[in-house]
Structure formats: structure tokens, C-alpha cells
Length: 134
Image (cartoon, rainbow, N blue to C red):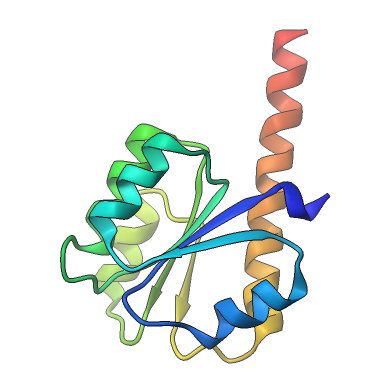
């Protein structure tokens, strides 16, 4: 059932972890190296999870986070960065990020845990919405 979830990875660099996740064939993963193009994709296609690098050249990752959450509040966002400050972490959470990963990734299992947590959250929301509309 995991392969029904679409994940968008927004990062200017190719990430080893993305290659590893794609090898698992557990998710439909797409990558894009532009925050502006990523937002256009989000507007035209449904992504359940977005992994967003904070340090993007064309648009700050926090700005992309805000735009995606405004457009589709249910999209689960995981922020990524090579370096971080407490302000960035708190801002990410304030703007609706689900989690935060510091590059380089320690291991694939940690990333999978974060993605699985995001999927579980989506499932809980989906079940709640179904109950409300009954």
C-alpha cells in the first residue's frame, strides 16, 4: 500500500538517500532541483510528502514550505539542510513542517522512519475525514 504515496524531493543536489529509497520501490518518488518548479508541480499533481532542502537558490525552502501548506495543508513536509540553526528548526515547525533532517543523512532507516510517521499521520487524517463525512 505504501507505493500509493507520492513523495517529492526538492533539492539542488542529487541525494544518495533518494537513490536508496527509489531502490526500495516502496514509494513513488520524484525529484526536482528548483523550489519554484516544485511549487508548480504541487499545484498540478498531488504529493503526499515533500522533502525540501532549506537552502535553495531560486526560493528559500521555508518559503516553499509556507506556499505548499497554504495550497494543500495535508501535504506532509520534511525539511532538510546541511547546517541548521535553532531559528530554522523552530520556523519550520511553526510553518507546518512534520520533521527536520540534517544532511548528510545518518542512515536510510532514519529517513524511512520519518516517512512512515508522515504516512501514519496522513492515514489518521484520512480516517478522521471519512468519519466526519459519513
